[in-house]
Image (cartoon, rainbow, N blue to C red; front, side, top):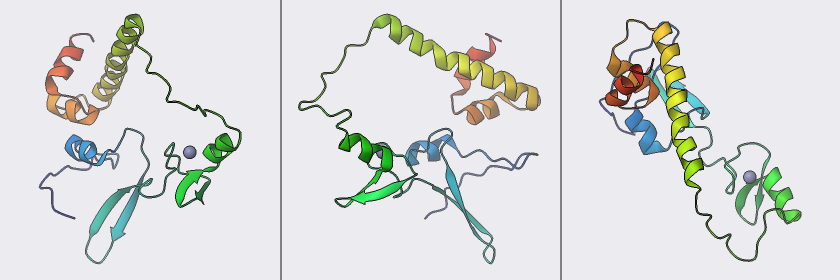
Length: 150
Ligand SMILES: [Zn+2]
């Protein structure tokens, strides 16, 4: 464990933003479950991915786990294997993506960001553009781009 030098303050609702650099380095996704560690004597608070070493090797589920031939697997994956669900003798060929679908996919995050930004601006009208960018995990230029759409 090392000191990152990054600091964040707790907001009025007790929330804190985990810097994007840390999330990216540690593979922490939005909505991921995290576990708190606290040492009252030293005043140290830590966070760990709940799934660390505790998730299904196939689907990353964290519930109903058991060991199968030395690997942690979830009940659903074990049932799927028993029932031969998703079993193919050769790798499934990569499907070429339909360009129309691709275009649609690229637009969705913008709409989601737009919605999230609108909510954040309502909750924290005084915040700086850089703060919105950090809260949403995107660049400042993306925020100014999206702000034009509001
Ligand atoms: Zn699984």
